[in-house]
Image (cartoon, rainbow, N blue to C red; front, top):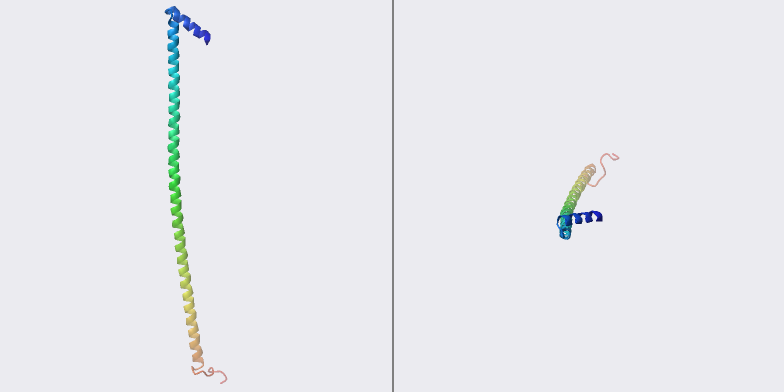
Length: 131
């Protein structure tokens, strides 16, 4: 590379004496300018990628918050449904017990009537018993 640099300087001095210093300075300035532009482009791209990542993270965080809120509401709804179902079942159980108790009372009353009718209602002995 250094041999090539010397060749270019020699050619520049052949074309115009003292030109090698001017061209070399301009070439270095141009090279530095290109490097700066390249670095700026890399920085801009990196910043853009960071911004996109930040947007995605914010969107994910928002989605997670909304999902958590939805899950909490759904859990409350499910709990309320279960409570209502249990209340309905308890009411059905109470109604079934009440119905059973009423039937047992009716049967007991019927047995009592039959018993009274069998004994004649006077506290005596049952008809047909020993005579």
